Amino acid sequence: WWMLVGVCRSDETVFDRGEEVLGVAWHPERDVFVTCENRAIVHDYEAGRDITELAIGFRATGVAWHPDGDLVIHYDAYRLVAHDPWTGERRYERPGGGDTTGVAWHPNGDRYLHVLGDGSFCDVDARTGVGEVVHRDPDIVGLEATTAYDPKGEHVIAFVRGRSEARL
Image (cartoon, rainbow, N blue to C red):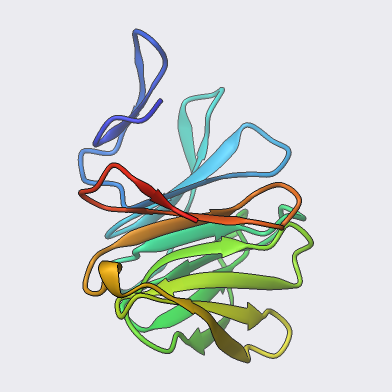
């Protein structure tokens, strides 16, 4: 389970970032995960070490690992950036459409969802970068939210920072 600044097993801290973590995503098949805030770092869970630091430029507010395991995307203030998680190489960058606070890949990997600070959920075609607002929640305007698809890609859940309830 997660604490504010570290990954914990029931009685030991495995990683201590020393800073707040705003996003985390597990590799789909390996014991590797990525965290983000002022830095985005790929970690080896079993070895307890950092693998790669991704150059993000700004405070990252959401991170997601592509289902094939070969691409990590994150949002900073107003853009999406895709990286090779093993080399840190920047693959592409796209405008984000607003202050994004959460991002999740659809399980089939052909699109992703991001949550904007205005309460919008935007579904984006990963190949073209074209997106559309599929839901708007006025109760989360100005708040940070994180989001995830269920394994079948049929439902989305969002948690809002500072609140305990989930939104479906």
